[in-house]
Image 1: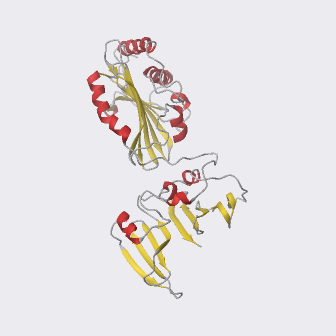
Image 2 (image 1 turned 120 degrees about the vertical axis):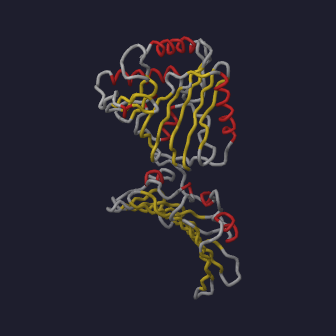
Image 3 (image 1 turned 30 degrees about the vertical axis):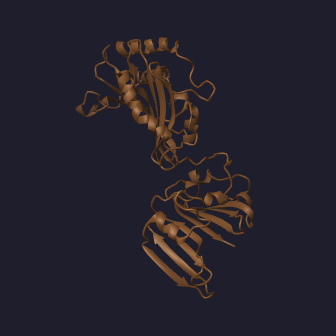
Length: 394
């Protein structure tokens, strides 16, 4: 580590003694610069025992992040190739699951475990489908610490933690960590801004962009449980963000989904009428007891697009992600069929079917207050969600 970085780390260590404790009574603390540097130092120590897998002096090794030194465990980026007192580590990326990240995280850590490892002011991740603030604490001139999630609906794409801590020179650090996730599991950990200093005005400008996000809301993360402790499927799950399936009308469907690609009425032998409305990625079937009667939603199918069903189920979810949003683990399994909870045909229940071709089906049922029963059938191919069906009937 260069002299400049070493002095910066020492100065921040001394300053930390003067700062008040942060979030001492609310779970874990925010990420600090000292903590970040301790982890970065461990990566440099690991790299010192290995030879780079590439030639850092090769022109192709020079990236926008600096000169890349590629190792089995990840990549370190320096401001120069030559190893002397002027060489400074700029950023680092970890890929190896056997090398620990900050707070015992690694590249196999699940999303909830990751969030629980750091300060968490917004456990529901209430925000927009694209992002949500995790926390923002502190104030100028002392310092500001914040965390933010970027996502695609329920799929977390990254969790970022940043530390703006005041140095003896009156400048501020602009460093932090980005955890990259796929299928809500960490796949890479990146430290950035290790040697970057900014002014109070720079920090304030950033806060002016982030602070409004603290008040954005309306889209939340569905709670999950790896132990099977999530709630059973229930009537409240029929209230989607775009439609209430329990009492939906064709007009409400059109208002939510726009013009139908197909809209057909089918006369049944018993005198009832089916109205089949097809939209991009969704089909809704309404049933009227007689021509001109009140249409009642009896079936919804999602098989494409980005629409979310009960518990925000969506095409592309993994089997594990879907299962952990509902109760499971209370019944027996013969290897092909597993009773998740309850008894089929009796009140609320759930079961799963597993097939040798990596397909599976989850089935849930819930009684409604008006005497009807809602059934949710979730189908998977290659362990990825391919179709969601909700049927409502007597």
